[in-house]
Image 1: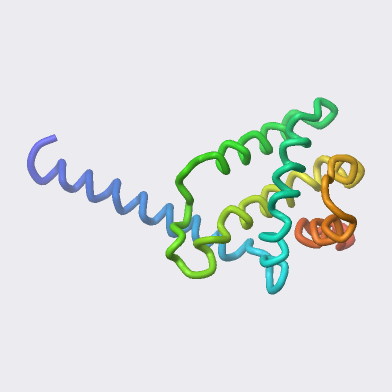
Image 2: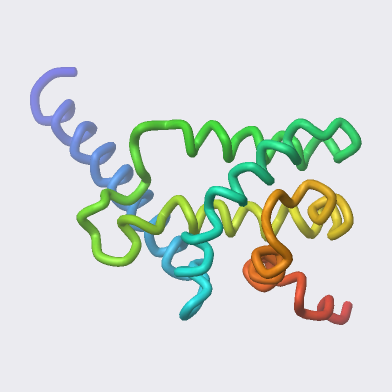
Amino acid sequence: MTGAWGWDLLLGVVAALLAAWLALVAALAIVRPSGDLLREALRLLPDVLRLVRRLAADPALPRGVRVRLALLIAYLALPLDLVPDFIPVLGYADDAIIVTAVLRSVVRRAGLPAVRRHWPGTDDGFAVLTRLTGLDRPPAAP
């Protein structure tokens, strides 16, 4: 890389990375639970993390579910956040939002009985989890 062509390429890569990051932040803002659900999700996080670990270790669940859960665990183990903590609202809640979005997908595929069997928390906590993942709503008509 020499001259202006190298700088143009570098600026293009930086702009693309920034645009991808902004798109991810926007997606997080869209999928975040509304109102008090986000606060409840943060409060349930320890039980949800145990649930994720238990579901990921269950060989009876489909491989795709276990893979999603393993990727979620890997993301949560990373020391870097997708959204820096200094950004209001989303900064501290990005992990809870991502966990909720993944669980919406995983819970629907694994089924309510599997999730209930592995739930380590209280019945009230499980009720909040079903609201967060949308299991309290009837399935959409085809």
